[in-house]
Picture 1 (cartoon, rainbow, N blue to C red):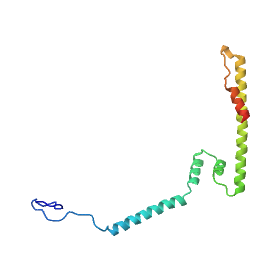
Picture 2: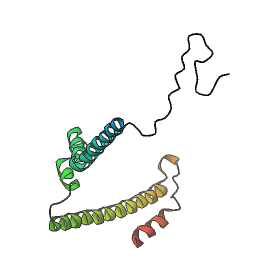
Picture 3: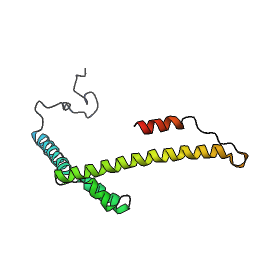
Picture 4: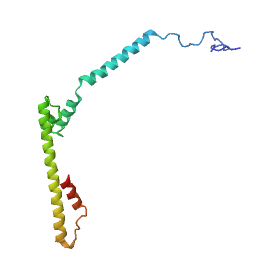
Length: 143
């Protein structure tokens, strides 16, 4: 009668070697090699995170492809002092305020053109004034 663990019993030429079982204590050499591998990978990842400057690399790539100018690249990099940072912030806010004024002026110009086209009825083609132009002008003036 076969017993558990005897894989070759009852077969011709079979031996009575027990099946391999899990060891009570793991192989120390294999475990230490895996720990060394984990430590190596961990240190390589940390080295890449702390010592690679991905910001400068991406800005350099954008500059080399011509998508941004050198001045824009300098603005993207962090300023070295608080004074230069505040000056750059003020410049950006001034540009933003100027653009807001330009947009408001352009919206008023578009509304004026719509009125002129509606009055002219160019080529027997009637152009209606959009209903929301006055609401847009009120929003631009109030903002």
